[in-house]
Amino acid sequence: MIHKILQYIVWLFIKMLISTYRVELRDTRYREQAELMHPKGAFIFAMWHEQVLGIMLAHAWTKPYLALASRSKDGDYAAFVATKLGFKAVRGSSRKRGKDKGGKEAIQEYVENLHAGISGGLTVDGPKGPRRVCKSGAVIMAKETGAAIMPVSARYTSYWEFNSWDKFKVPKPFSKIIVTCGEPIRITEGMGPEIVTQALNSLEERCRQTEIVH
Picture (cartoon, rainbow, N blue to C red):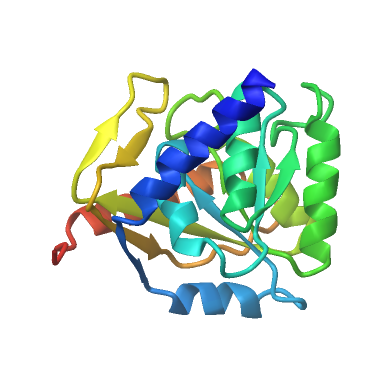
């Protein structure tokens, strides 16, 4: 019961913050390209764990995007907030099959939804890091479904930064959130997660050089 109450408190705090944000989504042409690369329009948008809040807000209440959350207590909060934002929560892990509890089931459910044409986001260095190093989950699912991977990056005019493995960032009240889409990647045999790491790092560098107009 207490756990549930705390989830609502976290959500109310985030909802209050959301009402003060200004969110801008840039380079959506890449999202359209990613949709055209799959027969049913599904794609995977890849992001760093530290930026997940801003990127989710840019896609909230638009389509029933998939959101992967671990089966930990932290994952309970993430899944609750994701559902409130209009996402479809998938519980488990994106790690390789059979190596942790719920991983196989999560990948299977995610793959089934991608085949059905439902796109989704993945924090590709989560749930435990190392920071800004893509793991294999997104690449495995892209190969199995033919869905492209589209890197996405977020910038905030001001934010709080947690002392956590990922340096998780929460935009401060009245911040502007800029979310930028990158060129989609068609994953073929021989490609590994390093291609996604490189793409996200390149997008990060491009975003840092882009002026934010308040």
